[in-house]
Length: 147
View 1: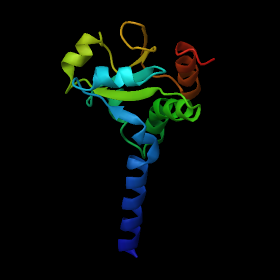
View 2: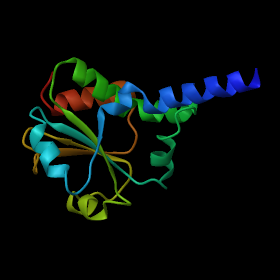
View 3: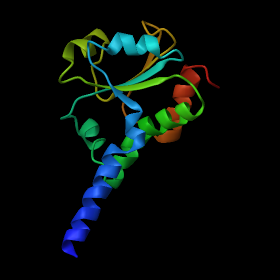
């Protein structure tokens, strides 16, 4: 019985952490960042974060209720925009590993979400700090011209 409980717990944890929602979030690096922006014909939304940042770190803990509420806005927006049939790339940059990429994009606080309009480049909007799911989705849609 204990073994079955452990197995169910492991399967649940894997489902939560590896679920389809997270597959919509690209891991961005210096060598693929610009290419991914260009491929996103309807724009891009990128979360710049660092693993040891309290707010950023808590977005990686799927079983914590409060943490889940912080994680939800980014993934909720990715899912909602995808369901609209839009080619918007949602990505994440680990600024501890990709410091130069974060410096190039002028990132000075974490987490920072940047909405790149079509074509990327300098046509962008920075959102620093936490937003709830509906507010963040509304901002993304407005900034990308979907409303």
